[in-house]
Image (tube, rainbow, N blue to C red; front, side, top):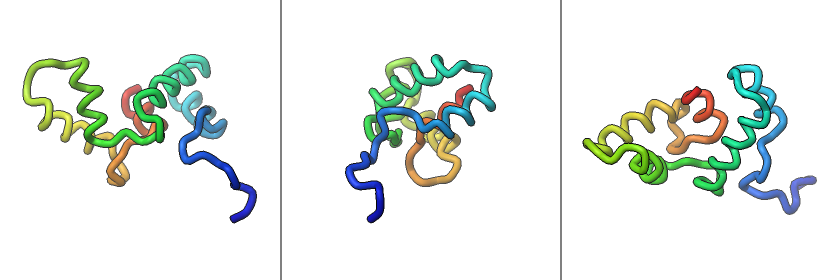
Amino acid sequence: MGGRMGAKNSRDRLLKEDLDFLKVNTHYTEDIIQDWYKGFKKDCPDGKLNPDSFMKIYSQCFKKGNLAEFCDHVFRTFDTDRNGFIDFKSSYLQWM
């Protein structure tokens, strides 16, 4: 089991390697990325955005149209590894 005893499934802070990767691959500062991460963790405490949560969040921004079909398409676009959820790093890169 090693030295991970007591480790959380969901991190409170973005891993340094993920933060560094996002800073290099986007034009945003560390503070902005950390703020986005805090919002992401508020909406997705386990660090995973699933299709139902995605539609709930997206529907707050867009009230008209066929949201289910559109959200399904957008979610599949962001879920590039097809694991059924979107994590912060992959979603942040897609949206930026």
